[in-house]
Amino acid sequence: MKLLVTGGAGFIGSAFVRMALAENRAALVVNLDKLTYAGNLENLASVAGDSRYRFAHADICDAPRVNEVLAGVQPDAIVHFAAESHVDRSILSPEPVFQTNLRGTFTLLEAARLNRVPRFLHVSTDEVYGSIEPPDEAGEEYPLKASSPYSASKAGSDLLALSYFVTYRLPVTVTRASNNYGPYQFPEKLIPLMLTNAFEGLPLPVYGDGRQIRDRLSLEDPCRALVSVLSLGRPGEIYNIGGNCSLPNLEVVRRILRATGQPDSLVRTVADRPGHDRRYALSSAKLQRETGWSPQVSFDGGLARTIDWYRQNQEWVRRVKSGEYRNYYELNYGGR
Ligand code: NAD
Ligand code: DAU
Image (tube, rainbow, N blue to C red; front, side):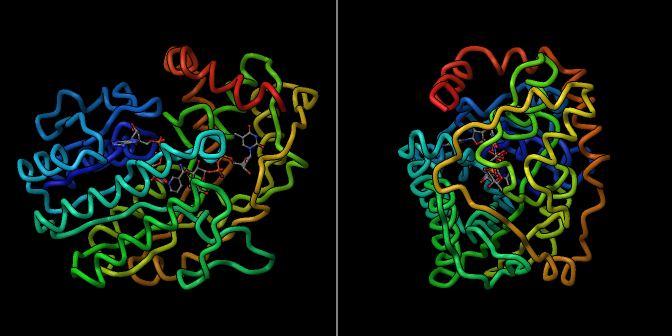
């Protein structure tokens, strides 16, 4: 199989590329990435010399360039990760989010249609269902209720992608996963931010009362789910990917403090995220039924391995926490 992966230099995309090559699931993987602040080719250092891997520096909003890459590769499938993925940045500056997540997805869908790509996997999120009252869980038919510019852009791109199946019969499948964590995650997201701050004895900024609930997935589980959907998922369908692991943010932060040997006094309650969704909860029954997938990694096991990775890769952390990161940190946390 020849795969075109967009956003393969990011957190989940790079894990998917590494897995596809390590497990011999692809004869060729082409990583199309713009290399924004979140894209980092260091994440792919272990496969850079592999003759089955190629990098195409491109913006998914650039139609001629995307068409050129597609025509050259003629992939059997596109796995579309590229996005502006951070909710707080989408609140501070929504424009790039709509540009990449909507216009970029549209450009890629058009190119896939014109080049008759046989499979298009659109990677989306549980955030499109909005906050869910207990004890409900969102199945794939649950209404969309996006709260942030990020989640609205993902909900819009999901609908656009599915419309290409209905109207043009482009074989699109959509996945919606909960909160992923693991190695190489940019330290703007809760877990890597909290644990890298904990290493340095810096304050851990918890939004509002910290009782917001997220479902968490250790990175290898959603990557395995995407591989399953690529081979067994049906075109025109949506598949939720959940971890059966609902925890309040404050509990996650306390576990990080215990595991890093730091005191609870590092926790700082700061102003809440505007429009902050209270609870996400997914049912992955459809995915389990149709592909046999289920999450395998416990939260404590996944967290311990993630902490080890960040401890052993402090140079990677130091590099990504310099430059642009400092400006973002000041902008997001300075006034809270
Ligand atoms: P990330 O921010 O780590 O990586 C995004 C990648 O996309 C980067 O390599 C970046 O350079 C690239 N990119 C951004 N704009 C681009 C453009 N215009 N053209 C080409 N490349 C561009 O994101 P992530 O956390 O790995 O998420 C990947 C995908 O998975 C996203 O679509 C996100 O919505 C979805 N998702 C993420 C999670 C999660 O917990 N992280 C959960 C569910 C779904
Ligand atoms: O649920 C899937 C989503 O998970 C993905 O679609 C997104 O791409 C991904 O970024 C992630 O979104 P979240 O907003 O849930 O992730 P984040 O790590 O930013 O925040 C997790 C929770 O922690 C959320 O309730 C906000 C809270 N938080 C976050 C940060 C960065 C804090 O309390 N303090 C913080 O400093």
